[in-house]
Image (cartoon, rainbow, N blue to C red; front, side, top):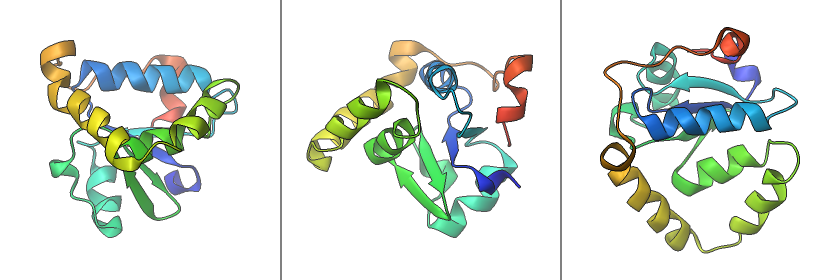
Length: 135
């Protein structure tokens, strides 16, 4: 069942989001996180149950234990599942007031296509990562 693990939903056509997913995969040595695009059927099924409209999101959302975490809270909570140095950094960054961290997050999310570009369709995962993608 895909919801046995936290799922990081991402904009599948966004170059920045795809790069972030690759970063999360390489730093998640225990393989805790699963991944699916916001454009997937799984996002359309799970996120509305958590009060989130997948079509209204601007980048990443972490779905964990039936709850959805968006903006900086989602990214930082996902980073807390990682191994090594990203985990303590995420803890420290989570101490910043949410309005500040969300402000920076929203600035990047709003400009992500202009700054990093986008694909015409979702990229396919590497064969060795395919089991981590659930949507």
